[in-house]
Image 1 (cartoon, rainbow, N blue to C red):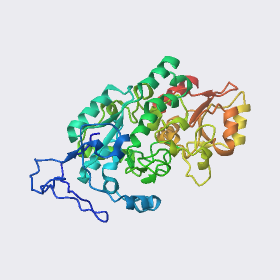
Image 2 (image 1 turned 180 degrees about the vertical axis):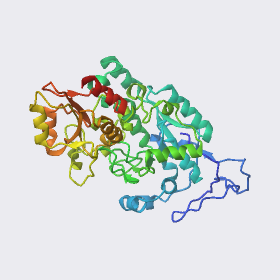
Image 3 (image 1 turned 120 degrees about the horizontal axis):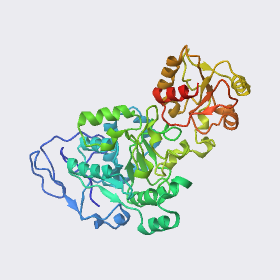
Image 4 (image 1 turned 45 degrees about the vertical axis):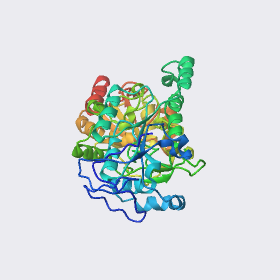
Length: 456
């Protein structure tokens, strides 16, 4: 298994478990070799066979050699209170969190690289000056652009990514039994389990910790509480059993726009699909560009509700008791959540108000109403365009309203208002008894305005 290592800065043969000073460029101590001074262009690191120790038999992937990481005090790792550490690092920078992770786990930790924004993790690891490893899951169904990025990243950092592949027999059985695109009909979980989850499980069995690119702003209801470090709730590590694997999320508290500012500032390779409207990138059949006014995660498994926006790699984020039938987080329906669409141009409708709209067959004016939940990030993403639409429709004779359809109103909205997922947009014509549901996922002003003008 090749240790993915960027050596643009120097490393020393030992790491202090109490305090770490970034090594100075120019002095390199070769591991297991006599100490000597090398200049910056003479980048080297000692290697040893991956299977030199029996415990590594279940590691990610066999390879000719791997870099020797400094000896890490396992006793300290076992005794670590990671919940407390997460609180201590809550306000730390991604670079500090990454440095802490690499220092603690050395060769027993690796970065999970998906070919999207995770390149930021590799850059942070590179900046620490420590050796690091990178692995990726090749499902066999990635975009060509993603494979091109893999190659560019390897060349840019001088590393070898450790690829994990699905079991050929399992893939063959799935495709022969259910076809190439069964996930469109019965959900993506089965395909992801074969192509991603099981390969990941094999990979993690060779590690004591892994590093992911999860962010709190990525997915509604599943990632809003992601800590910077945690005991992995779903997978087992090298020692086996519950609690044997630690999960690091260095960019958990970073917003997507700040990740991109960082990538541009550091001038690192990125997936060319990003320039075509793709934000969250997975397998080719399950990924598409995000439309105006959409949350970034809506480009993944768009035929499913919000509860399915995890492939299984981070299923520990999903708390069954806090997810309602629509896949949206039911624990966030209290009144402490700040409201949205809060402007004079948008009428706040109560339950009786909406019921009256439903009863009227001859309305004085048409209505456009959004069914929303203020905590839903998909709703938050379209707030700007909906407010602008209300301004454009001011004085046109079309009333623009909002109805909070979560909590106690959820069942009513599902049964009477065609609510499938948040947000749902309805148009109540002047001379029709039933509202017309907006069918598109385009939530930009022009698309919504075209819908209204076609029906008013």
